[in-house]
Length: 113
Length: 116
Image (tube, rainbow over the protein chains, first blue to last red):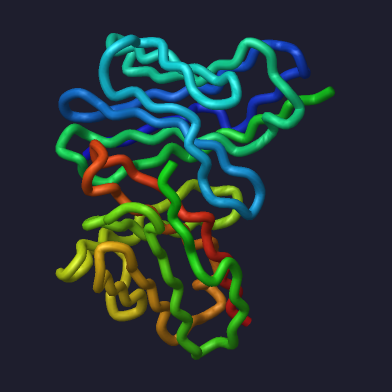
């Protein structure tokens, strides 16, 4: 079964600095990878996904992620963090059979002014 | 983008009562819907997969008699928490897979259930 690991519970960065939120995955075959953001008491908002094609995926709000097959990673990045980026971020994976999506434990991003 | 709605957005009920949560895909058809629960500061845990017109598939450890799922149409799935207890208090999120669009999966805004 597919699984996702987010090794950091918390990431703190200063506003204007680049940010990285890490994600590694395990899946049979080629993966479908996703990043979502969640604000307090809200559902998930889609940021970006990798299905196939370019390893660098650009998404909403200036976020991007790089698919690295050899390292089985899909880290989320943003060149310049905003205070409003502070939220809970989830990485998720689906396998090619289209089975359900599995989520990582989440990483809380705090961007300080 | 596609929209998934949930109703109610929050509910408070007494212990022992049953609560129904609706999940609707507003502008697409979803043969498959998923129900997740999320405890505070934790990730989403899949509870069950709901297929239109057939019985739901429950994850290990999820009581199917307690969490009743009905997926009667291509745009509606319901989750009924029967005889709710305080430990059922959680954030419940549904997700719907678009049958016609590369199997994209869209999430509802969630329902906060508090059982007193």
